[in-house]
Image (cartoon, rainbow, N blue to C red; front, side, top):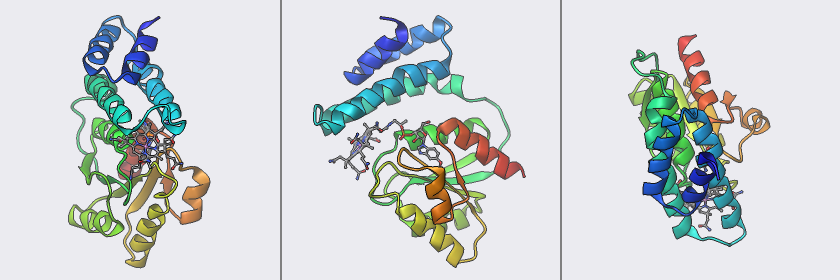
Length: 209
Ligand code: B1M
């Protein structure tokens, strides 16, 4: 088994110390951080997701796997982001109301901060009113919403409707596993990006324009 397969395997087992050790070793061996994230940690999480769907694992095992994933991501953080860049804009970020998934949202935050953006992280289960109130308070450029459930993605429309009804000019970015460009257009959001790195690139582009 190579490093990436081993990282995926230990992540699925939720063995955080082993994941940390292997991620560090893989970096020392010169394996790019992006490959460790995508082919190790995210690959492992996708196997966990399949098993979760098929009732082969349950919430506690998924939470333990998520903790192992976060432990690995923390080690990768300095390698995935650029240090010392100046703040260029403010993003209010959160997972929408009714949704408790935050691993993808945290990756988005990490990548955006790595681009020098000031990120106000509202956490999970964020109501549309809170997104808007916090964006006004922090004079944000962007409201960024994450959703992982088909049952909560509709909350994004509520955020868009609230922003438009108040004639506010925040750009609205959306993303998460069930989201696509078509949905973005349907609800009238401004931008959909498929992953954390492209979300950070797009946010920087918006703030710089
Ligand atoms: Co949940 N869960 N879960 N879960 N969970 C999914 C999402 C599911 C697909 C699993 C499955 O059935 N295969 C399924 C949703 C089905 C659907 O709606 N179609 C599901 C379900 C059903 C549920 C519960 C309802 C289960 C239950 O209780 N019966 C429940 C809901 C709780 C709630 O939110 N109210 C639930 C609970 C949980 C846990 C708490 C156990 C745990 C979350 C822990 C946590 O987040 N702290 C969990 C997990 C871990 C998952 C899976 C296994 C992994 C999600 C994840 O973190 N992926 C997931 C299955 C899967 O996705 N394969 C599943 C890794 C992460 C990096 O990817 O978040 O997609 P993701 O982020 C990506 C992109 O989407 C993008 O960037 C990232 C990559 O760079 N991205 C953005 C994300 N946000 C973005 C925002 C952007 C741009 C890009 O711009 C703003």
